[in-house]
Length: 114
Ligand SMILES: [Zn+2]
Image 1 (cartoon, protein in one colour):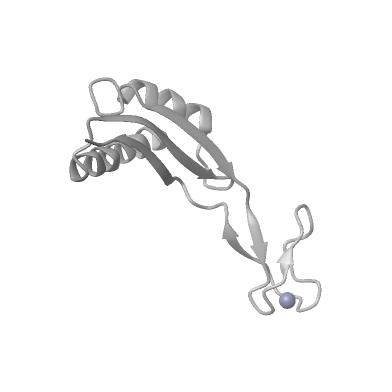
Image 2: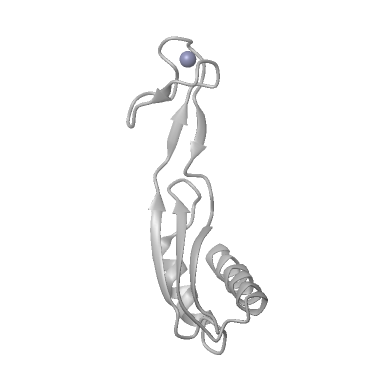
């Protein structure tokens, strides 16, 4: 499953960061998931609960937020309103997705460092 490989990669990154900073513990992590990335936040949580046992994330709280999709006109850079047709009304060109397609962004890790 997509979400499981995302979580595996996420924990790997946290482990690498914790090692690099010689952290004693990881208390939490903040991640963002793009609205249009095709990732199910609930499945991601379940995957995290499954994978974190025995890793540096064992006692780390997962804070998950969703990043809303944002579209702009590729020609004039005008933002396209939410719910509006995905075309620039002025330039008549299809809008370009600028946010919301990221599968997973790691925003912050709360590390306990010596
Ligand atoms: Zn335009």
